Amino acid sequence: MQILSKTGNELALLALKSDLASKGDYLLIEDEKSKRKMIVQVFDEEYLSSQALLEDIVKDEVVNASSNENLHDPLNIGILSRMIRDARIFKAKIRAAVNQYGKLSSDITWLPSRVDSRVRLLGISELCGFLGRSGVLPIPVGKSASKGSEEDFEIYAEDLDGRLNIITGKKESGKSHLSKMLVKTLIKHGAFVVVFDLNNEYSGLAWNKDGSPSDVQKKIMILEPGKGLRFSLRYCGKAAISDMLKNALDMPAASLREFFRIWDWLENKQSLGIDAIGNAINTWNINELVRDALVSRYHVIQASGLFADNEEACFQFENAINHNNGLAIIINMGRVGPTVRRMIVEIVLSKLVDLLEQGKIHPIFLFAEEAHLYIRDTYWEDIITRMRHFGIYTTFITNQPDAIGDGVYRQVDNIFLFNFTNDSDLDKISRVSLADNDTIRSIVRTLPQRYCLAIGKVVCDLPIVIKVAQSEVLTLGETKKFFKKSA
Ligand SMILES: Nc1ncnc2c1ncn2[C@@H]1O[C@H](COP(=O)(O)OP(=O)(O)OP(=O)(O)O)[C@@H](O)[C@H]1O
Ligand SMILES: [Mg+2]
Image (cartoon, rainbow, N blue to C red):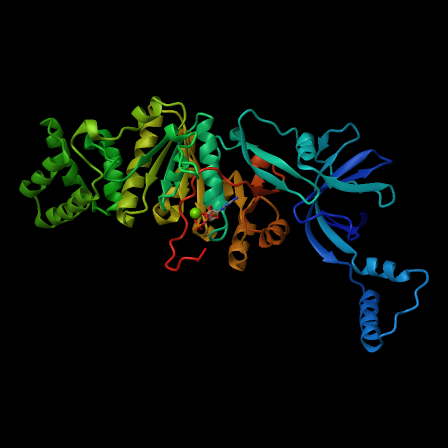
């Protein structure tokens, strides 16, 4: 490969067909005279086209079509001409430089020599060596998808710790698959994870494909609303219930005040409970409109099955978390309606913040699938700022990048980008993400299924294409089909 030209922070490199490199690959340009090196990333590939070359191709085609005779070519010039026609131009972004002492530097103001430079593929392990990328809690995610060599690639749990992550890509591109892999390894490393699972698919983490229990089965706790997921009113506390009534059930302020008057009265009598509240609402001396508002909300609360009076049968986060070394609490929300989903989210998040504030539980990794379906608008900011400080570290998984506000993207630390072909999605994601526009547009548009572009802290801010590994655990969550494919 040869350097052709430079515009801005882009280099154009001339390559022959035998020079293998694909979009996303890193190249090392070694300037032999100055002993400096430059690290660049290929983001696009084009044919070498000049007017003369095009005319040549057309002429050749016309000659071939109009005569059957073999052309006399004793010096084998035809081969050379074919090589030129197949020459291509790699467009590459300058990412970093290595100074004469072998240290990574951000000084990329110099130009490598066109004559004395050697260009070669840079393997991911070598790149990580330059970056000094290391960690103690690895999460193997698959292989680096480089043309030259496929190397195992891992990210480090430390780089997800305390961070905001987004996994996005079009439908069925492999987002949930990657997210399950992260959850599985995090709990193996002893972390506590809460998953808002919209498709009831994360429960597959407890089983291997062959039906045997997986090695993390003991660390998986599946909660179904109304079964495992039941709270007592006293455990939730006034703040969480108030959030739920206000935000998930749109309770007017006047009714909310009456509700908590009833609550206080029952609490004084030591008889706070879901049935007792129902009875009190019916007999309480209040305006009929307020009573109607209370009765309608009360019915929703009762029908949700989320509350019970028997404290022993109720779920308590601190009991689950403090008795385990690593645990995934999977909240199955696939079978409940939007209102109950919102109620669950309000209670769970309020309660987790409350417990973290009191120092009763360890920090939590929260995985939220399609969060725009159940997280209210004003909550996003809360999650990424306030809750982060308390110790809730969120990963959003979505196939609608525009459902997440710009404010969230601005705070994001890591993005795992799967394929997008739709222009408006690409627009959105390239406008707000951590890497430059050209890289995202060009690489992401042509990513095959199950490949993702990792951007951010996990890859030391150098975008890397990863081929996500298969998993040995049961994968649920496939779209149910009416027509079965015949074997
Ligand atoms: N790296 C992989 N290796 C093998 N199979 C995979 C891989 N990634 C995804 N799959 C399979 O592809 C299918 C779709 O993956 P997945 O459910 O993760 O997609 P998704 O992006 O979450 O889709 P949706 O938008 O519908 O939620 C699943 O059956 C999954 O098992
Ligand atoms: Mg999914």
